Every structure is written in structure tokens, then in C-alpha cells.
Amino acid sequence: MKLSLSVPVNEEFDAEAARLIDARLASRLSHQDAELFDGAADAADRMGWVDLPQQGAGLIDDIESLRAQLQEKGLRTVSLAGMGGSSLAPEVMAQTAGVRLEIIDSTDPNQVAEAIGTDLEHTVLIIASKSGTTVETDSIRRSFAAAFEEIDVDPASRMIAITDPGTELESLAADQGFLATFLADPTVGGRFSALSAFGLVPAGLAGADVRGIVAEAAEAAADLSADSLDNPALRFGAWLSIAHARSTEKLVLAETSPQLHGLGAWVEQLVAESLGKDGQGILPVVVDSPADIGFSDARADALLCLLDPSAEGTELGAPSGFEAAITGGLGELFLFWEFATAIAGYGIGVNPFDQPDVEAAKVQARHLLDGPYSGTSEQTQFCEGVIDVLEVVNEATDLVSALQELFSQVDEYGYVGIQAYLDRIADAEAAQLRPLVSTHAGVQTTFGFGPRYLHSTGQYHKGGHPNGVFLQITGEARTDLLVPGRGFGFAQLQRAQAAGDAAVLVEKGRPVLRVHLLDRDRGLEQLREAIESISPHHHYGQD
View (cartoon, rainbow, N blue to C red):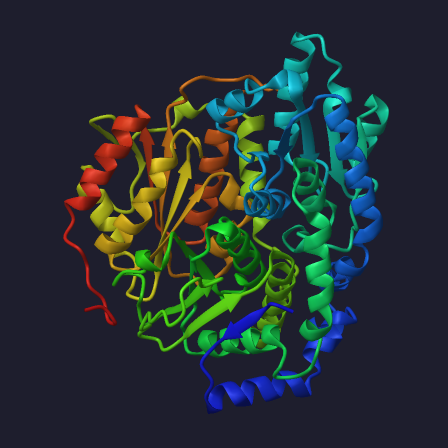
């Protein structure tokens, strides 16, 4: 096994680790013992992930056979419509392998239109949805189907479904005669599905060595199931539990190996959605590299974690004293993080397998779509330059004051969450706002493209520690794209998802500043200048 973990050890750690070993936590997880979480139904029905490394052989044979068929037909572009765990795991696998997998996890009309317009004649579309009714994936499927028909291609001949047994998507695939359908294990939750059909099929069809990934996980399984200090997942879970008990609940993740680019985003959704509930949890903060961990990130409330460190002896000097370095193959790391997250859930006292606050934003978005909602009908508080300010925390009348009011609402151990309902590819520069806000607000700051984050950190935003404030950014659509068979287009869907999530956050008492960019490029620049005009704030633990 290549997996290795370095964490600080002290008497407190020894006591927590001994408690977890005495509870036989790791081995009971491997035997799917839901009594660890008081027999909760969500736990009992969502622990099948522990057996996935031993069950992958037949699935991989099917993947390799289908890949050969695609190559024979000249279908060289594999596109994936999936959200959260259904897209993040295969994205990491493809990036690690250096193969192309087009991820469509957005409702931005420009991003969807660009995906459809790229090599459509040689494209196969994978629709991945555990429930079979995910609005984003269904809307993307409908749009691709219409585009295939326009070039005289039978849409079903280019579509592959991945879903649970008995869903609407399974029925649709059977009725229309999809190219292939993969039924996933229904006892595996979406964020724990990396080694299931949801992770392996898209990555494998794109050309990643999924057989090797599963073999790595299978080799690590025994060690990760052991009730012993030699178990790195048990040590890391104990470490997270201790940090959480000290109110050190932010996990700063820095990728140090380009071969594992994207792993941080997958870990983010796993940890945030699994642990952020009941007013508790661990909030991951993904940064670009160790160099990006500046004074505003290396704070007393932060745990610092290097993913696959490439340089030995890296000294970060976390004020909290909590630092870790994790090295391993991708298959090992998937299983390690899943075990460690479940172990941390037990230590913190939450059920890692439910997501009680995710549905609320979906309900609000559906309500807005079913009614007379239009993004253009939202009331503007004031307009400044190319930015409409839709919602302020108090009564600010200019952009800088609105930002200052938002930042003033967060305490020194809180965080700012930036939610950007923009084009994840064309508007990628928006992510540069994260370190900028972190510096000027003086607190941990996360960044997520919407609606992608709704299937990731969205659970934590509403159910985790109630110390976050939120900057939500929407933008005028560069183009629009109607969803065939629906009474709305992608621009309206995107705005409804943003408005719906903001409404739920406000209902829960989370401060939200909403801005709408009338021109995306100029608006981002204006927003950046406004943030930079605010004096950097220094909190405890910063120099």
C-alpha cells in the first residue's frame, strides 16, 4: 500500500484514537453496522460503499467492452451530465490519467451550448443521476437530444444512463433504447460513489485506468478496516474529531501534485455534505497550492492538509497546530477519505450518510420555476456601474458599503462563502475572488460555482456551523438556450436556483449579499476593485 499519513500526535489524540479502537469503529464500518449511527435509516441504506473495491471486476469488463464499441464507431468525445459526486470523482480520475472527459455540471446556458457545439458528431452523452430526476441532468439530456436530432442522429444511440434501479431514467433509457444503461448499487450514496458505476463508467469510457484504481482501493481495504493505530483513516478521523471539539472546524486543502488536480473538489463535497449538519461539521476550504495558504488562510481555526505532498519538509506553521500530509494512489485515497469521513462523523456525533438540508433549495427553485418567476422581475436594491445589487444585508446604498456590511457580519471564526452562478469555463477568473475576499474579510473563504456547489458544500452552508455569510454572484446570460419540453430556458433555471438557495439561507438567518453582473467581464473587474478598496482585516492568529 502506498498510502501514508502524517498527523500530530499527543495525549488528546491518543485518547480519542483509543476510544475509536475500543468501539471497533473501523471494522464495524466495514461490516456496514448502522448501529454506529443509532440505526438511522439513511445509514442502514447507504453503507454499500465499503464493498465496492471487491465488486468492480464485472463492471470494469463491461466498461472496457463498451469503450471498444465507442472507438469502433468513432465516438471520441465522452460528455458527462452529472452533479456532485456523480461528476467530481470521474473528473479527478480523468484528469489524473490525462484523458479528456467533458463535464457538464452547470445550468449556465453558454456553458451548456458550448458543450453541445463541441464535436457533436463524435459525441456520446452520459446521463448520471442517482434519483433519475435531477433537474440539471434532465435539462442537459433534453438539449443534447434536440441537437442530435438536428444533425439526423438518433439521440438514444448516443446516450448512456447511470442510475439506481427503478428510476424514471432507467425506464426512459429502456423505452428509448439507449446505447447502454448501468444500474448502480442503491445502497451507495452519491458522495460515496467514486468506486461505483457513477465514478468508474465515465472515467473508464474516457480512457482512464479504472481497473488499476479499483485494484489500489482493494489492496488498501483491509488496512482501512482495521481497528488499529496502523489504520491511517482511523488516525485522520480521530484528528478531525479532536480539531472539531476545539472549534477548529475549517479544513484547508492544498493540492501539491498536478497528477491529482481536482481531488480537493471531490474531498470538499464528501466532507462538507457528510459532516455539515445539526449545527456542526468540518468545512473544507480548497486552495490552489501551499503557496496560496497565506495569513488569511493559516488561521487559528484552520486545519491544514496537504494532498499528496511532492516536497518533503514543507512547514506551514498552522496557528492551530493541526497539520497533515496525505500521500497515496487515487484508488487508495478515495477509500481512505470515505472511511476517514465516516469515522469523523461518528467522532463528531453526526450521521455522515444523510443530507437533511439539501432538498430545501431544490424545492424553492422548483417553486420559482412553476410560478411566474423571471430573473428580470427580481427587485434591484440599487445599480452601480454594470452591477445590479439584488439583496443587501442591511441598508447599504453602494457596492463597497454592501460588501463591508457583509464582511462585518462574520465573526473571527466564521467564513465567507462565494457562490458564482456563472460559466465555470468562460468565467473561470471568478475563482480569483476567493483569496481576495479572504484577505480583505480576514476569514476563511470558500468558492463554488452554482449549481455545482448545491450538491457539495450547499448542505454545510445551511446545516453546518451557523457562522457563514454569503456573496452570491449571478450574471446576465451571454446567450439563452430553451429546455425542450419545459416551460423555461437555462438562464431562467440558473437564476431560479440562485434565488432559491439564497431564500433558504436568509430563512436560516445566514446573511446574503446578492449581485447581478449586467456585463460579466466588466462586472467581475468592478467587483474585484470594490473588494480591494476595503482595508484588509486582521483577526487572531494572523501576523
